[in-house]
Image 1 (cartoon, rainbow over the protein chains, first blue to last red):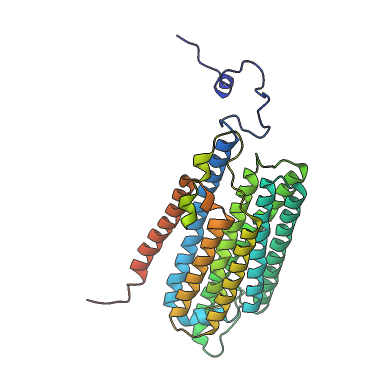
Image 2 (cartoon, rainbow over the protein chains, first blue to last red):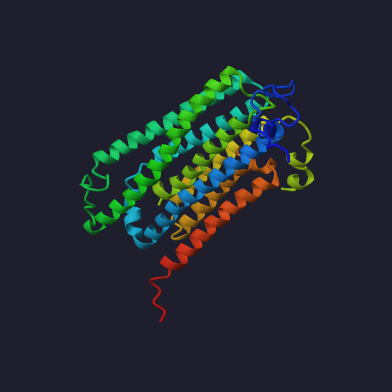
Length: 236
Length: 114
């Protein structure tokens, strides 16, 4: 009977002893993958599984949004009139711009353009920061008008007081959906800082750019959520 | 769309150590960006016209087109292996199931057909 192989034997078939770094071994190749190609495909696929559950997570909110909108159409219309669509449209342009710079960062990483990639990631971070900043300004305005749901909700719809509670419901959806979206943006900004550091250090190149690609998948997904939120919250 | 069929995807042609990658042309990213900008203008413009109940439908169709542009080109799905396509398509399939089941309940409660 053979003795059980050690974990090390399993990870390095044919390599005895040494910490298996032969000449072709890329420093970022994880030991459980055959090669960088397999690692790249596995990691992007894994990210797509994550994005799939994010689609269903936000999908549930959109589903509830449509059901309540069907129940209270007048309140939804009144509520959306409290949104400044010019600001919303400008923020949409800023966010799609950040998606462009993110896509260009991935393109740069594929071509080993270290400075270009770093610049594009910094631009993505700046545009994302502008978006969240503008969102914060809008939140401050709404709270000032007494439109934050709950005990802080002091707004009364004067032309039709019966709509007041419905407007509060609309604002609940507004704050929940944009708040969770903004939370994703803030997490994305934190990740971008880490990626800026790694890119500047020279971690990525044509052989190994999977992590930048995955960062891009996350950022573009957050962009897509906003593409739906903008017409549904600002342009009812 | 014909491009997908004529061009074998990177997974099939992939042979060696490097990451399988298709570096799209820089111009294509700007084309998608300006298409997204144009569609954003269309979204705002259409919302100013009163189409009644059709307004939301049109806004959602435009948003879906925008999302498709982002998914296929910015997220590189168009050059991805088939396995990625399966995950992407099935995630929207589950989303459709969720919408269909919720709506078939809530949106029909007021019908009172009996």
